[in-house]
Image (cartoon, rainbow, N blue to C red; front, side, top):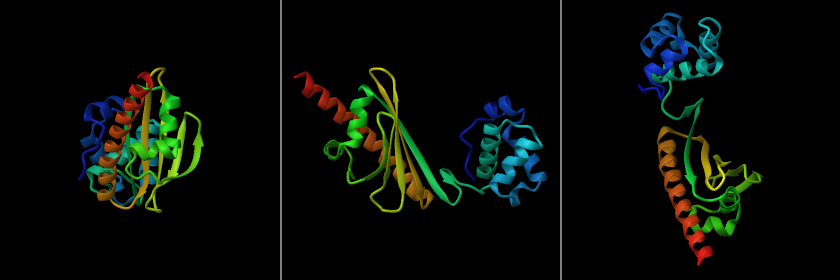
Amino acid sequence: MTKPKVSDEAVRRATGRDWAEWCQLLDSEGARDMAHPDIASLVHEKFKAPPWWSQMVSVGYEQIRGLRVLHQKGAAFEISRSKTFAAPVARVYRAWTSAADRKRWLSDPEIDVTRATANKSVRFAWVDGKTRAEASFVDKGDKTAVTVAHFKLGSATAASRMKVYWGRQLENLAAHLESSAVRRRA
């Protein structure tokens, strides 16, 4: 069993029921034997939860009942990590798209960039040849928020490992951006 990310209070505020009530209700509807899309449809159509909350309730229910583990998305797993940097978006974006820059901060810099939208996102095939990831950028003026999502991971263990990995890489990127800013000022 995994505890849902959303608190009892939040799910009650949004849907009128807490996790215990949702579990009892969905158990009585046979949800333990349903596929995820069917549970989400039931929550939305029969119990009138808004679409986003229908998904959240379904995932939370599946986690509580041991039908889904943390980071699981269907048969695979996915994680994300975010960090805000004290650097303009163009500089942060370049740190991802320039192979020379990547070698200075990314432990596995030989990614295969498959799609890039300037100052918005970079999609890439991971070095394992099996999984994919994406870095998304949000311009906050003199700061930039970056979210890295890594998809199609094969297990909960792999997901946990990559969550730690990307946390470290974002710290490496922060140090790289800071050191390059210091060099430019000098």
